[in-house]
Every structure is written in structure tokens, then in C-alpha cells.
Amino acid sequence: MSRDISSSVNVITVAFEDDANAYEALTTLKELESQGQIGIRGAAVVLREETGQILDKDELGEESHVGTATGGIVGLLVGILGGPFGILIGGATGLLVGSLFDDDDEDETESVLAEISKSIRVGHNAVLAEVSEQSPEVIDTAMARLGGSVLRRPAGEVEAEVAAAEHAQREAKRKARKELLHARHQKHLEHIREKIAELKAKLHRNRKVPAST
Image (cartoon, rainbow, N blue to C red; front, side, top):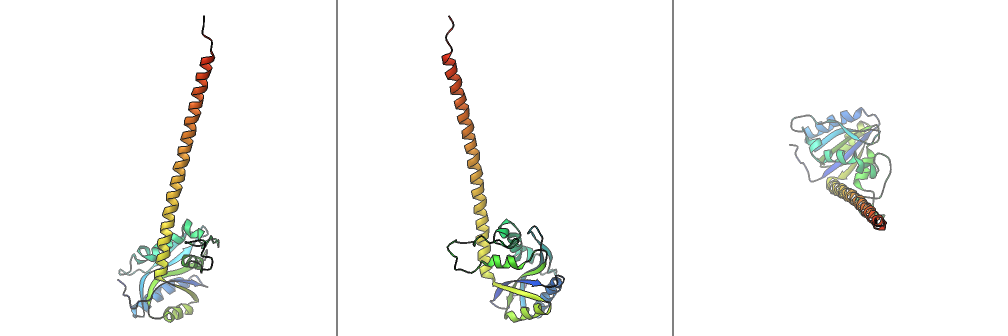
């Protein structure tokens, strides 16, 4: 288990001029943790494909870290930002359809998830990590040496929006199922009405047939 050396827990995304440096950056983060300068809760090198999907290319590999990237907030981010919801908030295509919350919040800053998503550029590697740190300068300086630009957001804010995104996706699925069931029900009712109308027409025709003498 990685140790929390301070109460400052952040999610960072690091973009690089040279994509190959993303792998070296992951090693650097691991070294900083071994020196007691930071704590790592999860970290991975990720790649956004042209389709918008985000792939986990590499993660911290020591036994104490296995599964941290895919099992924690980093893994949740990869799943959300690489899916349909990630496209809606702007990461893959640059589109932005408001925020995760109320449309009335026009004076608010862009959502944290949208900022993180946009920082993972299409066709490029990036480092995505959840870290505890005493000072941002430690990671910022180390990443700058590798040509990396760091986006940092409080883990609590990220977790809140991840929870909101999961709720929004669940509600969207529920609404879609409801609409499909309604459409099927309406189609069934229309079929019944057509059948009843057909039977009434047949009955009406039969009544008009004169009785044989």
C-alpha cells in the first residue's frame, strides 16, 4: 500500500512533447515515492485513440502497486473519459455540452472532468495519477525536466464529478430503457387498435350481407 504523506491528495494529468517520456515519467513518480517525497494511490500511462477510447498502456508494476491504476479513481477516470460520456464533456472531439450539473451554471468554471479529458490529447500518451504530495513543486519540477505539463485538480472534486457522471449515465440508461419500453408499448397498442378496427369492419360488412331467402 502506498503511504499518504500529507492531506493534499490530487489527481494529475501530465502531457508531453515527446510521448516516449510518459513512460520515464511513470518511473520518476515511482522514484519520488520511494524517496518519501510523494505518495501514489494509482498511476498509469494512457493513450487516447482516434475513436476517443482511452487505453491503459502501462501502470506501476511492483507488487504493492498492482491493480492500483485500474482499481482506483484512475481506473474510473479511464472508463468514464474514454466512453460516450467523455465525448459529451469534450475530451475526444473538443465539443462541450455544458457541464455535469445545472445548465444555469454558466458563470462557473469548466468541469474538472472536462479539463482532465481535454488534457489527454488524441493520438498522444499522457500520465494519469492520483498522488498525495506536500508540495506541487516536487512533481512539477520532475515532469518539467521531461518536457511534461502538469494539470492538477483536488481528488475530492474529481471523485464528486465521477460520482455525478456515474449517476448521469445510470439515469440516461434508465430513461432510454423507459423510452424503448414506451415505444414498444405504443406499437403494441397500435397493433391492437388496428386489429380491433379490422374486426369491426369485418363485422360491419357481415351485417350488411342480406339474409338468403
